View 1 (tube, rainbow, N blue to C red):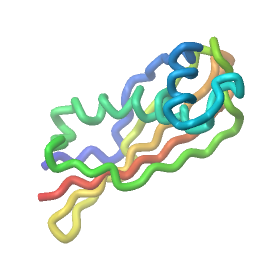
View 2: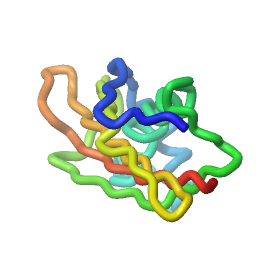
View 3: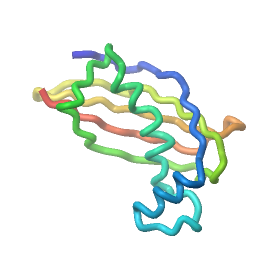
Length: 128
């Protein structure tokens, strides 16, 4: 089992593309004309950074035993279509109890001017 608490991963750039935003909006029942849905943070924060954790040999995440247990977002503002965002993830905690491992991944996202846009926190549970 890996223990990677405190590990930071390289920054990931993400372009907020109109077609992708529209597809996402329709998938959640929103009108694409309303702009970037708040939950699109799942794409620019979590989807952009979680593969770094999952692919980290030192983290030793067994994808077959993985449960995405919690997800929360804090928005300072919502991005606009066409923006380039940068997300940086770090493992906030990595603990084990009762035969399960709990890994918390926090991601901070900023815009091209390095102004904060959002923060994401995901909790992954890996069963033994």
